[in-house]
Image 1 (cartoon, rainbow, N blue to C red):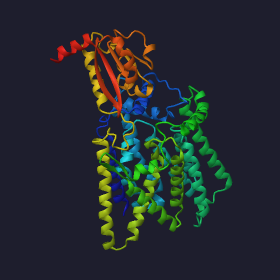
Image 2: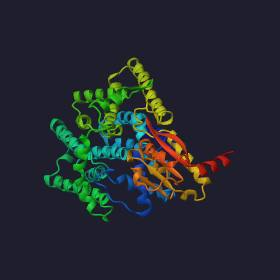
Image 3: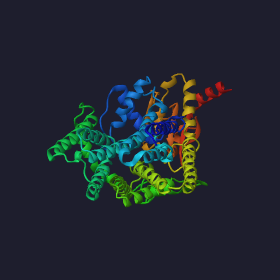
Image 4: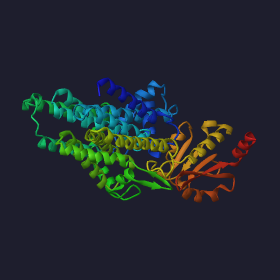
Length: 511
C-alpha cells in the first residue's frame, strides 16, 4: 500500500468515526453524571470560576477543554448550552484518538493502523462513550497519546518525544486519578520490552546518559507543569495542586467500597464478549479475538512494540478488573490497547494467508464482523440509546423523564412568573440529577434531601419529589395538586405536584 492510498483510507475511517459520534448528539437524555459535569463547566463558562474538588468530579481538563468549542459556538452562559455543544467535545476526542494510532505507524505498518482505526471507529463501546460528556473518552485519548509518545521515545530518544510524553502524561493526570494505573503498567511494559529486545540498537539510541537525564527532567517537568496548570486553575488556586494528591485517599476508599457499582472481576470482559438482555445480544468478541491473535503472533516474532502494548494492556485490564468499583466506561483506557492489538492481529492474519484462495474467506468473515460492529453501534446510539437492555446505557436517564421537563415548561408558560416560577425539588442526590441541568434556566429552584427542611409546601406552584419524599408530603397538600408520575431511570419514579390553579389554566390553553 502506498502513502496516498493509506492517507485516503485513513480520512474515510476518520469521517465515518466522526459521523457516528457527532450525529444527533441531543437524542439521548442527559445521564446524571453528564449533568453534573455540565453544571461544573457552566460555572467555569459563565464566571470563569473553577476549584478542583478532591472528593469527586475527577480532574479539570474536561471543563477547560470544553471552553474553546463553547465560545466558538457563541455559548457564553449555562442556559445557552445544549447537549450537542458539550457532547461534541468527547466526540472530537473519540475520533481524534484514531489519529494517535499513527504514533505506532513506523513499527506496526499501514495495515495494522488502518484496521485498528476501523475497529475504533465502529466499536459500540467507543462510539457510545464518545457521545457522553464525562472524562473517560478524553482520558482514553491522552492514554493512547502517552503510550505512543513513550514508545517513540524508547525507539528513538529525542527531546521532542520526551516533551510529547510529558504533555500527554500531564494531561492524563489532569483528567483522571486512575492515570497512576496507566503510568505503572506502561513503565512495567517498557522495562520488559527493553529487556527482551534483541535487535541491534540504532545510533540514535546510543545517546549519552547525560542526554537521557535531560530528557527525563524535560518530560517530568512538562508533565508536572501541565497538570499543575489545570489543577491550580492556571495558578489562581495553588491549593488545587496539593488537593490533586490528597484526592487519592478518597478514591482508594471509593474503589473498594460496596454499593451499586460493585461488580465481579470479569465484568468488563463479559460486557465486551457477550452481553444479552431482553432478547438483545451485544458482542465485540471479534476485536478481542483478533487482539489476542495479534499478541500471540507478535510475541512469536519477538516484536518489542507488541510486547509493550500487550503487557500494558493486560496489566491495565487486570488492575481495573480487580478493583471492585466498576462502571462500563472505565474499560476504555485498556480497550483502546486491545483495539490496537486487534489491528495488528488482522494484519498478521492476512500476512499469513499468502494465497488468494485463503484470503477470500477471511475477507468475507472480517467484512461481516466489521458490519456487525457498525450495526451494533447504530443500534446502541440511535435506537436503544437509553434502553436498559443496552449494556452501555448504564443507570441511564430514560426518555420518560423528558416528559416531566416538558410538563414543567408547559406550566411555566401559563404561570405569571414564567421561568421565575418557584419549584421545590425533594429527593436524595441520586434521584435529583439530571434535574439541575434541565432546570438550569429557571431562576427559583430549590433542592432539599428531606421535605421537613423545605419549609412551607402547601402553596408552592411546582414540587418534584422522589417516592419516599412524596409519601411524606402528599397528606399535607390537601388534594389541591394535580399529581403525575414520571420515570427517571429504570425502576426509579419521580412525582410531579402541580398546583390546581395552574393545572386548570394549562387545561384551558390546551383546549
